[in-house]
Length: 201
Image (tube, rainbow, N blue to C red):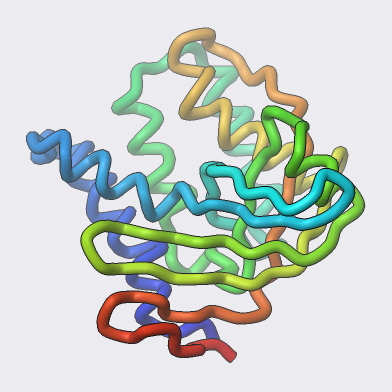
């Protein structure tokens, strides 16, 4: 089981910020920017493009039994017409930020650039995700990479990305980017008070 320390870092802290944004209680921009570090690891890969690291926003992967239902809810939300950012935040809280629905053994992202990371991981392979939240918290995740250019994961992550980054402005879902699913193999606590302790498995 994914350890509580990492679950608190990757999920609960992000949910707390989301709740503050919805309630209008987040008045410190530095707190907001700092919170984003939990979603922006450096993804380290090695392959045809050589050794590479790239910052990419990662998202939560729902358990497979919830994916189709949630994708339907996203499409339904979009079809009801253009919404503001607060509507989108509330949707994320209600349908994505549900601990019972999250598969904590997986993380996901899209490749918007399709450059060096794509060259290294388009056929799958091992990757390392480095998280760092100043001043002292850091985790290293070792993962096997799955690549999806069609199917439910592809549709879900493109819809989820556009729901927050495109839909409030454009009123639609347009993304067709490759999706990476990172299946977690190891988690190392690299924080200042741990000095590289393996905490999973």
